[in-house]
Length: 148
Image (cartoon, rainbow, N blue to C red; front, side):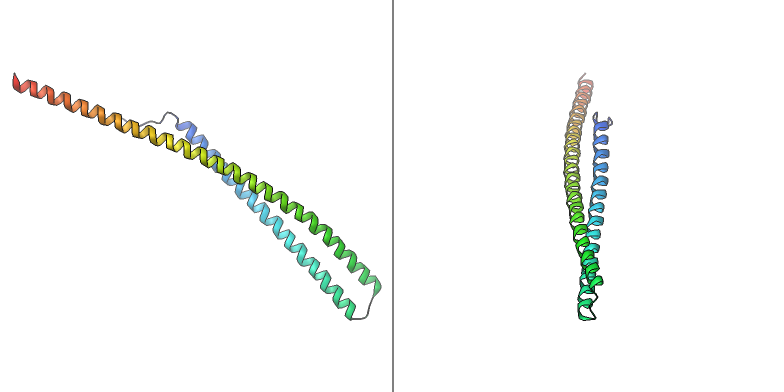
């Protein structure tokens, strides 16, 4: 029996490598998004700390300078939070782009695998036909030998 060789195997291999690369890029983008979200949560927690500190200052002896400093810190945290929200949005876009690239790579690999599968099925059918032809020839030859 002959050995099956898929003539587009190199293309399939390249498509699989591209899929692996797309998976890695997606993973990196997802990790970056998680990191940006964690930073945002840390900023929000820090802001809450400043707000709580301001509440305590208002119940204790009021120090106007410390209260003003606390208010500035809260405003700065608001600005930092807005900037971080933009970073999160950018990271989300990067994740979506990586997901789209991964999806496309997976489709291409699946397409190549189907082509390979069809080629293998054709190969098997050709082998069966060749084998059947050889058996017929052998039977015909042997029948011809007995008849002589």
